Length: 223
Ligand code: AMP
Image (cartoon, rainbow, N blue to C red; front, side, top):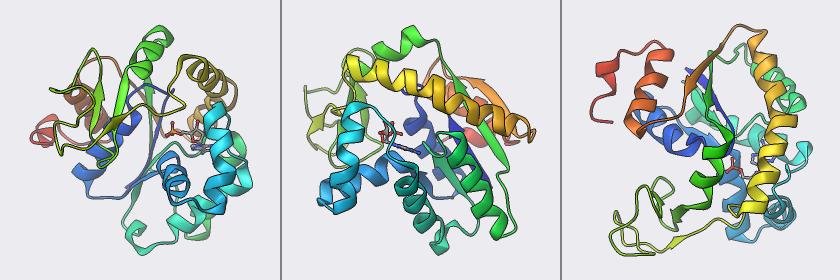
């Protein structure tokens, strides 16, 4: 299956994407993660992208589309993939459609995660990530680690993303409203969008997502 998971920052896209991709045995492709890898490696692309990430702005389309084109060309995507964070504007959606059409395919499903904006700021500002496992995600209030700053899963160091601070979160929300909601409209016109509530426990949201793509609720157990 070729799936896009879309929703405002703080909706839990990363958390759900990792679980859904594992459940469906398809690669999870996050442009945000790809940029952060480049930044950590100190590549030229990473140096260019860093200022945009820090400011909560979108990285220019030519760079972003280049990164995704290279990723989708790898053989592990042949049986499907789950996109998280791309496309984020209409031009990227059209570029993606073009790339997929070249290989005779298209997106099978777009899952739109919905969440009230007031909840987003609280969720993101308290989020802490692990330097060693990208799906080891904590929250200072809602799912605090046993020892502050230390990952319960692997002992790795927890940190706050430098774009997870309040001023940047507001900017990212604004960018989502103006740039990314047209992507939802774009795919609505193709009849592939299902909106699901992102409010609730991780497993509840995952169940909703699996049902939306035609998997039974009990398929979700053990994920
Ligand atoms: P995320 O991890 O998806 O929240 O993305 C973090 C940041 O990476 C965003 O705020 C943007 O600066 C950049 N980014 C990720 N995906 C894209 C994209 N599709 N287009 C442009 N910038 C992106």
